[in-house]
Length: 256
Ligand SMILES: C[S@@+](CC[C@H](N)C(=O)[O-])C[C@H]1O[C@@H](n2cnc3c(N)ncnc32)[C@H](O)[C@@H]1O
Image 1 (cartoon, rainbow, N blue to C red):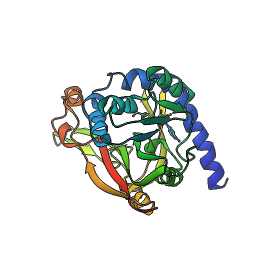
Image 2: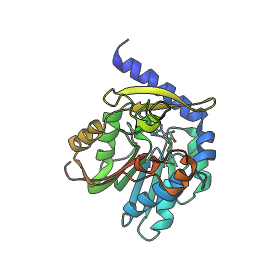
Image 3: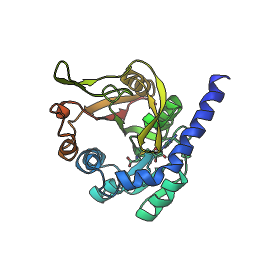
């Protein structure tokens, strides 16, 4: 089978998994359920989003990131649009906020004219997208010149598949093992019993180089320590505060 056919089939399978687990995501990660969103992710994005007027969120899910941007910067945001390929996510996003437009669309094919937005946000989405080259090129296309692209990822180095705490009972040590960082890979992870989520791992350089090739330059990058609410759940690991789970980048479009 050639790579394109293979990729298409995997993309369909990935989207079906997101469709069937949308409610699990909504119940566990939105509306205040998740300390990492509440204490870290939403504050970072809303801070960086200040002053922008037209905002697109790619892979908006049930819309919590856009809702936070809208309530934090009510005076500057005039247009807020969220897209997600999952019908189950789009339906809930529409119910939870009437102040934004929500459409069904996939990142590699954005249904907007070039230069439509001055801010694009993608929060914990690109690690679920197979066609990363097309997706980043689409983000750059729909951004105005000097516009901002905010990209948040599960930390590509420290959260590589196969990473995790090791309790070494012989050496009486705890340490963080890093999985196969350089291997670009698609995996289906059982994140909870019977909940299977597709993850695409790629090294950080792959993201940075694609951003730069599309005229998007990093202005600021954060690798924050997990927030208190998460650390309270990781009490058995003394070093948990030194292993970031999130990577956040604020980039600017400087070339067309
Ligand atoms: C981890 S959730 C994040 C949702 C939202 N950005 C948030 O932070 O609350 C990932 C979302 O990515 C969406 N997704 C998966 N594949 C996608 C694609 N090809 N294009 C756009 N979104 C996609 C899923 O449907 C899901 O809603």
